[in-house]
Length: 54
View (cartoon, helix red, strand yellow):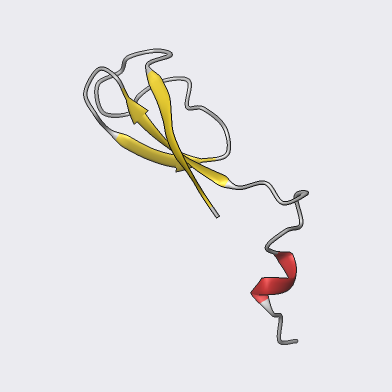
């Protein structure tokens, strides 16, 4: 079966992805939820929202 990805783009109520930046080391992550811990430097609760991707 051939699926069209665009059909599922707003499946979660139109949630958008956010860009998160670690205030400690500057690592960038993309996701809907704020990361709990930085994979690069190990800092906890150090991510700040930079922008949202549509």
